Length: 89
Image (tube, rainbow, N blue to C red; front, side, top):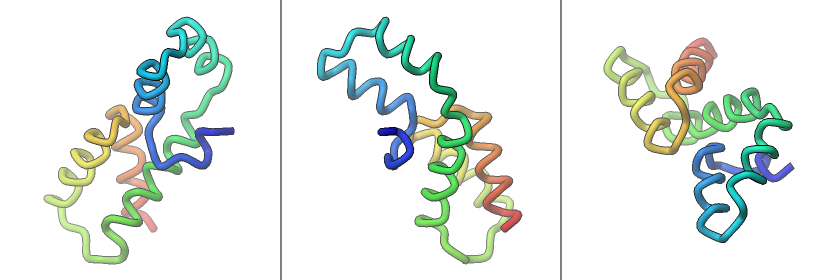
């Protein structure tokens, strides 16, 4: 699937496809049929790993991480889950 290899959020992929002329109804149907929440969470974690690596994480970094992921198009729940998972590792 396209989304599993992407470094982009579902929202960004959807916007790019709309810009290329893909029908909005078709996109809604596709994303409704394909629950990609776990894939998006993994993508968000990969982005955090790439940006922050193994450096020491502070409380201020948590806020920065959530902001970073939301700028990348991830919803708030995915951002919080990814930050929690990343900090546990």
